[in-house]
Length: 240
Image (cartoon, rainbow, N blue to C red; front, side):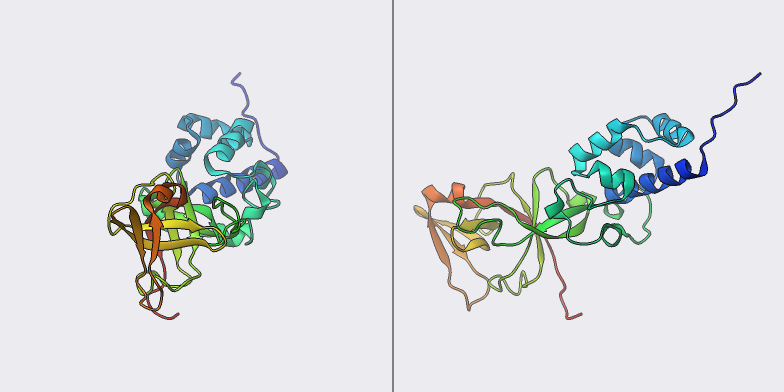
């Protein structure tokens, strides 16, 4: 006689479907193919998990390592999406709700990232470190291994970057090509975004807004003060 397929009870099936939905929303994976890519498993492993109504513990570990997701939130929907509770200031259901988009397109897949203040965790410290105040869903194609998102609280770069804009900083890039936008830290003041120009033995940090003064940093200090280069800006160009 053929072996009977194992049947999931109603409670187990409900748990599995809800947990799998949280995984999909948090990673931007909408198809079984995309989910297998995110988890680095075969598609047959996804099918086996669905048949058993069971999510392997190693999947939770992978998602923690790759996306910083909290296994308790993935499994039970409790707490915030991230293992660091300080990163979750907005309800997960609101953060992860997405509008339908065509499958397979990189910009239709997103990742929820923490957004820091410009001041950071301690503006009196010698080096800048982030302090999350909210979260933002960012297209997968905009994400980088060492991306830091900050919310602009200054008008020094208006109209190019307005106050309240979200800025993506690649902290893995510390070069200073003339005219590029860089994030530079000043102790006791916090992070500033400026266009950088080399001038002899110093760097000129130029503001776009004429109401703000340009800044100068000795070349010898620039590397340790640089947090990274600005790689994208998200903002409204007209009043809401």
